[in-house]
Length: 286
Image (cartoon, rainbow, N blue to C red):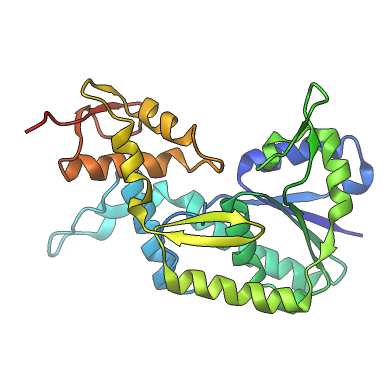
């Protein structure tokens, strides 16, 4: 049986690869999708326009704004911004290759691995909404609130695949089951709802329940963790994520800090690039 494993994020792929040495039956190719669909715009993401809008948002997060092209000037001015997005654009190409593989290889089986976090769950919804034609060959392994052993032999409840020891994946693979026809329909509808809702950020409430919130959801926390003295943006972000059950991407919170600076709610010094490049503080009281 030809087996293809799908995970979300390179760190998950690395963790799963370590388990292949321990179990020949688990061995197979790994396909990982890099885009974190729990943050940012999803509106009409199943169209070229929706995908272009999402790329532009990622550029905004990276601090890269497309330069306006002067009348009569060549389009090449925007090329550097596009190059930065090759990884995000790569997910759509990887998906096209996945569908081509499933069409050409009727025996191909797929295991979709998802940890209990919004990135993996949103990625699962995105995939399932487009794979109905291959029902019976798409399996889900959802590590929902399951106990695993850590390096010291203690029990813990991982939220992400990269937290799991290689030998523990052997236990997890027993959870594999085909995605049912009802799930293809219901979960496909859930993806449509998420696209139409187009929330700024999507949070996992438990199970596979995703709740959309506006992009400003963590702004209050970021301001609360800032002080009257300058401190590294990375420290402020770390203080916020340290309190969260399901961490949010640092780059997203870094973007929110930059938006708060634009609004005058925070002051900064240093270059507004990554969260390691600048510091923030509260503006002086009026």
